[in-house]
Amino acid sequence: MYSEAKLEFFIFLWYPKTKGTTYVCDSFRPYVAKHATKIDRSLLELRTRVGDIVVLYWQRAFSYTIYEILQLVATQSTLASRPAQ
Image (cartoon, helix red, strand yellow):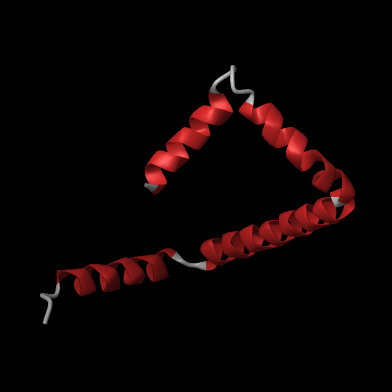
């Protein structure tokens, strides 16, 4: 029943005669207006954290040498080729 309910909700939002998106936006507008500063602060913090994580992973990815990458691939391929016990 979840899939059917989700489909009905998307049709409600999409179909122009039901004006579902207008109803949803008008319903949430007072909440968003009341908490706009907190929402903006949280989104800015999230953007900063994601940026830090991306930089960290890029640094880790470029710190590996070709030899270490080949060792990792060889280890993974030998683990995958072993039969299940």
